[in-house]
Length: 227
Image (cartoon, rainbow, N blue to C red; front, side, top):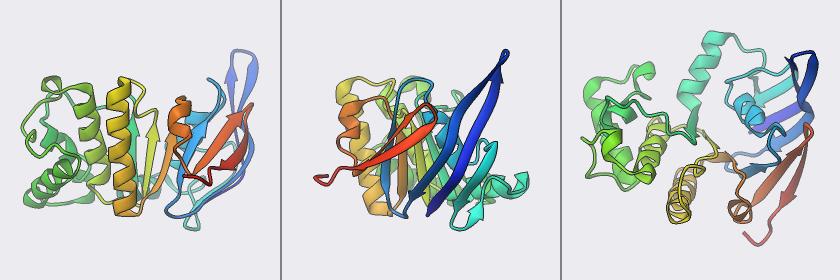
């Protein structure tokens, strides 16, 4: 479970102080599927980075299962990210010189998983997202949708507790977008993940059980009871 208490994030832009987050209180239960929406510059990606321990708040607490990510020493925070949090980004972030299988394996290297087990787990993860026949392909040999599937497999191969996705369909056409969302939602259900996704796509937000809207650094949460 995430518990955010009074989370603020301020930074300086020229002579101005920007309040990206301005006193956020938010609870995200285990197994939740939450979509974060809001205008450009409203703090969506900043909030996701806070949840992932990629950035620290100016003030406030970000508790993941009772551990405050805001004050955790860097080495322990890195370990938490490596073990418990999977990330999927809009730009895929695959290493172009590595095959699909090798890209997925990179998530297991920091955990000390041995080579043979890494290969087996990576192959299983790629099969789970429908790429069991593409293990040896380089990113340039795959479509955008296939590359995002590799990124999803990489995020999930370490069996994280949390999946964070920042505009994961932003570079895809509508048909491929729906395919990727089907994969993400299926993985969320099968693995019992806590799944938090930033998107500007209102059609995707309407399919989520809960939607958090960020405006001028403040958050409101609405339920979608029909989902």
